[in-house]
Image 1 (cartoon, chains in turn purple, yellow):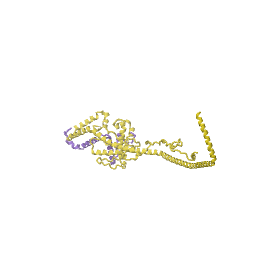
Image 2 (image 1 turned 60 degrees about the vertical axis):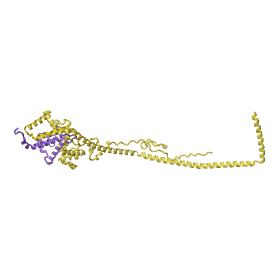
Image 3 (image 1 turned 90 degrees about the horizontal axis):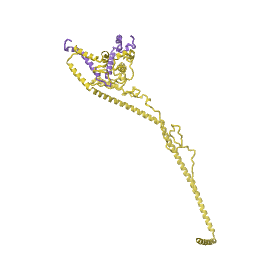
Image 4 (image 1 turned 180 degrees about the vertical axis):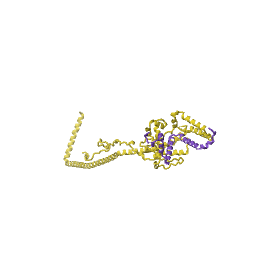
Length: 88
Length: 404
């Protein structure tokens, strides 16, 4: 269906399902683009949870939790052997 | 014959003495009367046109640097300062990162905000040379923070943390998309909005509120909690999460952290807020001092300008003084002339009188002398005899009268 705004200019959540492939192909996959994406993501999180007048513990606790989770996933292969039961 | 009095008449050619001033130059209705040396009455001059600060050009823009007023034409915009967000356990890198961003906000320079992007690595605490050169490279960066702010501003009117995505579909594709511009668009040059008061809401310190709102329409209030419990039980039962010795240490550590945060979180927050307030107060003081300085300069300038209007009083006073001095010397000389002339004339009068007196005396003496000479001896005897006879008669008369 025709959209008011060109596909190129839409955010991911506004893209309709049929337009998804074209949207993905449109993305900037150069190193500069990827770095830019990381920057944007970082600043999005930063400005929402950290760069406020009265922040809380949520700002870094979410980062730490994500870090913990990431490391657990990384070590899962070795941890599998420390299971208490063999069959689940 | 007395002395004659002289009244020297005033010469008509002497210009009339009048005083300058009395608002003469200001108001035309003051007449130049002959005021015999009375003190000039100073009238209040008409006030010069008041130069209000509202008419002042925004020349405060000259002050680059620590104050944010350069981009705000009116002086009443609140000073936007970033405060380092407080958190109970502060990691070294994040604190320095916060400090950097704090300084960036404090300077409030747009270019610096844009240029904050490239310093991604948290370990390097150096500020770097964040100059305008970096603007071109990091234009794309701007969308992120701007987007967050804009979207927050747009959607805060609706639900507090409603999923923008779902509601956007309800409102219609065109309306909201106009406000959500993709990051490849041009960065807006509007001044930054002030820092938000609180961060995004987070439940249990881990899960953002948006997730709960996302599930609310389908599962109600308890949905996410049930989901969480189910997930935990699933991981435990399938041993996707393996219970090891580290589990207990993790439980202890997390329990300790939760206790510390719950107990001391508020007080640490207040302490950090106080620090921020001190910083803000300092800067505000600087700003107020600068404003006051400039205001004092304005007032001084205005008073100087007002003084210029009153310069004529100086000249009037001087003119009056000179006129009075002239009049004084004139009268003095007049008086001297009068005295001198009177002197001369008195001299002549006294000479005349003296001559007359001398003549009289001389004539009298001469007449007496001749009369005395003309009396012969015979005549003298006869006169004496007659006198004696007269005296006898008089004596008889005198004797006769008291008897009566």
